[in-house]
Image 1 (tube, rainbow, N blue to C red):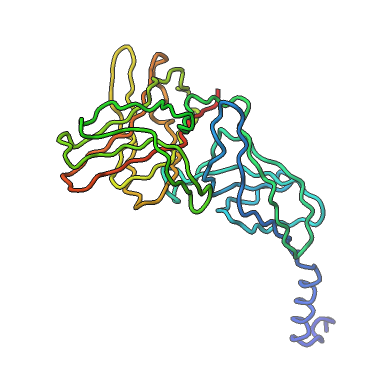
Image 2 (image 1 turned 180 degrees about the vertical axis):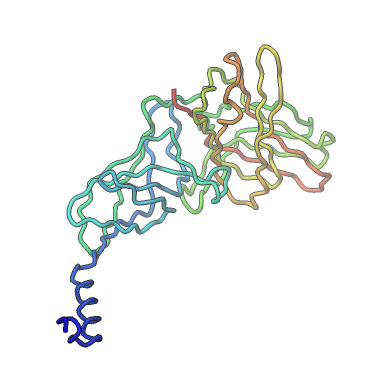
Length: 295
């Protein structure tokens, strides 16, 4: 009779599972990252941002995509190179998370210990050296590159100093563009536009990021006026809904509006609003505009 036939079945099972458990299960370390900061140079605008997600790598290995603040499991013990790629909520939607390609990835060295969490607080982002900044505006010099394209004589548009905060960050006073729409406005719409018509915007499919902060108690339409030798058209992009008294930062990617356009195409950016009859003054405030793309 074969030897195996003399071994009780329960003992066979015990030996099988014992053999399976001889390999020690790896214990991850954890990378804790609450937020990132932004560095800017002259001509790149200020460092106000609302980057709320990242893609993370350890020694070149993809760890995944994470919303901030994040505690990220890392199967490392000892020093590792950590790289993060910033991502933003496109059009203000958490359902559309995209890399902000005007930034270069940020790197740092982290000493990991199995089973322990290591907090990183020095992750700061720089813009790529080939990033072009077609438009930056924060109104701090008391001038404005946003002009009134259309309004009622009863309405006023001016630079004001008012409260500013993004989810409790950057709290304080800031200069901003303020549009006040009077109840006696008979036109019931207002158009605010970039003074400049932007040229040489890439048509090769490169990302074209527009970011801005807005506080409004009426819906505001973001749109482009696109002009070339053969046509001039108004291209709606999205609607910013009433922000209920809070400042909101929006990141939009104009790649589909600029892709494959003729080389002589010029773009003017519009913030427009239509108003129903009202007995109250309506207010739109805009700040911290940046239009960037890779050359």
